[in-house]
Length: 473
Image (cartoon, rainbow, N blue to C red; front, side, top):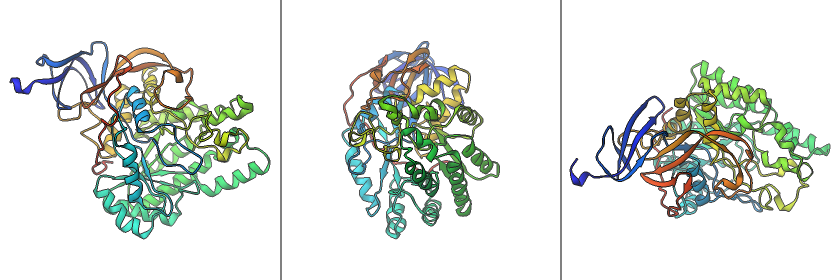
């Protein structure tokens, strides 16, 4: 190889695993891209020996929340620096958080605001989903089509939460824009009126502790909304992705639709594999500590956990995301909103942190024989990159792809503790869980950001915004 083609980095003796292949080779990197895969590559300016480790594509977290604007009195603990720092320490090299429109406000303005929050802060690459909360004629006819053309090709809609939910008619109108402009709609599927009715009954009876959150959002609420969203997608003839699916009843609806040939994709998250409804009844603070595990849809029971694992293995799910929602517990702008442990479950900020623990928690399923290495890569990197228009730049180890590579120790045992994590949240719901397999070294565009488990303090702002292409579903 001529001198002017020197390699910036060579990873030697790599045991490369992609969504479909596994092979031994050296990986050559130049200018942030993979330029060679082969045996005996020339000397690089930097050499890394990967003997005994797995070389996997960096994770793509297709659903996380970072520094998202919140209603008055609430705030997220993680900004784009602390959130992306935690992500890369957990093996994720690309994140896709949400630029969220407020009702009565411009979608374009939300995107501009979100760029200002990310620029100069993110340490890894990022794209944006949109959240469409107010689909006015101006948004549907002008703003949304323009943003899709500029690389914001996926957007989320809600069927619950008063400040975000859309009517059925609005859902259809947004789906129609997605069909016309070849974008992908992500759907939070829970029936808002059912939740409101159940919440009023529970709070009226004085049942306000965090553990009652699950009773206000039982499985039929998710099942009905999932079926309704599928029906809308069928009517409009457009793919959708149902996010954070919690259990067997919604899974049955998705399998039914997929069996009929409808393009219904689905995502699940670590909380539905590791948490149960009992975790919302933790005894600390006279039962309020369960607020740490309040998320929507809520964790269910071991039977539903098993159903989620089966659906991951059987191909019902295309994406495994963190749905990282970084609200600290002991924070008057977080889970202890206003500094109180007395307010009702329906006022607790929803969501759990998990951007750093997402991959190790799922990889433990590989170590236990629940799913294959190829399925792990497909769910956590390859498929989210394809679905959200970032492939082949992201999601694989191949010549021409970005050198986003994570070296995994497949037998390392780690007991998860919040003190060892890199987010800015004051707890993890997975405290004390032991996992087998851990990311030890991480490269983003050929830059080593984590070495032997230690974060190397790369410059804040080195992460680049990614314009997404057309979703591949």
